[in-house]
Image (cartoon, rainbow, N blue to C red; front, side, top):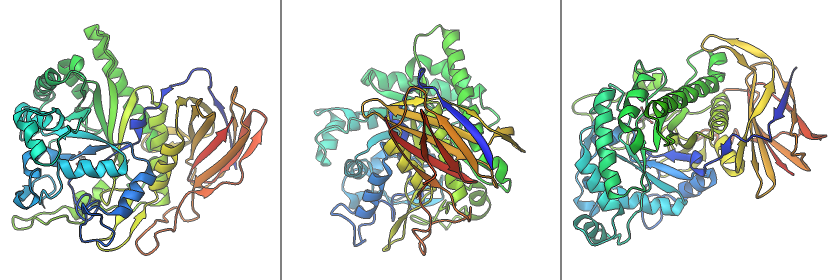
Length: 502
Ligand code: AHR
């Protein structure tokens, strides 16, 4: 048994937690949309063809904003294909995922689904195969009140009121050689600046996200951000970060993925502030961490990729990773990392939502279920409210191949003064040892405490079609109020949420 002592800094909050931190991402990829959120022939489908069981799960997950329609998909997407009568919409090849896009779900359908799940739309424009004019057309179609040529067209298609989309992504992962229309930082920065300027001429209140690096391991990481922001700093509100983690056979390093995410965010913040200083700007640019998750990408690259000139399936099974308890523990630590940076990460999108590297799985004509990663997200979305609070952690460390010596325990706290409630989120990265943790809550002595933990005797346990409820958050009855704080036992490889009332 190890020991850790944690002190919650109640005097200098990190910052207010923007509810957009609990956003997600739905891409036209695999079975995310078709046979995922949309399955008109399913017995649980509503009149619009959306699965009501999936709607209920998305609401339970507590997703606040959803990035759409891609992802790599958006860089070859013609938005006009997906509006108007469904029977007249063209089928197109999706070169990003080597699939056929039927366009049966588009802006109108997805917006009506978002109204059902109670989530905000965050739209990405295609700056890969298309450019500024198409982005402006989509903006006019989406956001302008009638009359105008494109807004009238929207009204004819059944939507008189604008969709009023506030947040727009200027392309997707344009640093990635796999991206259609991939460009150098300089070329992308210029196009992004021109597009942002044009979009702001339409509506200066739009919130614009310029593409950052598609991972911290890209060879251009750092320099990409500096150059792109050099062109766009005064025109955008966010720069994006994307990060996916997987267990490549080194579990100790995998459990420390949050350390990598911390460093990634700190580096991008430093780069943003460097550009700000050089420009002598008053503007604050923040981070939209609009793709983050566990993703067994190596498996996709080596085994699952679709190929062949005559092989363009509709809604194929792609990126359908099954998440273990260990995956969910690491996933929970990524949430801790995001909350620790709530002052600068003011929007984030769990990538993705249904069937594709997803917390929610469905079977065509069959049931839907929660993956292990569903539980930390739903808990944090429900309880991590108000301000994020720094936690100083005195803990043992352990060696990792990837990140050197890493703290065994990591944590963050939140305090919602309007409800007089707090929460503490903790990971125990030890593969073998329990940690007895004492947490000093300083000026926030609790009157009640309860805790839930993600842990299993089998760290590879998962929820599947055959066994959908094998894993969940289990009540951790070791939590005790102890003077001005609490004590708790954290099992090996575990993620814990403690909820407190003051
Ligand atoms: O989320 C899956 C893919 O990961 C997205 O399409 C792309 O943006 C990223 O590389």
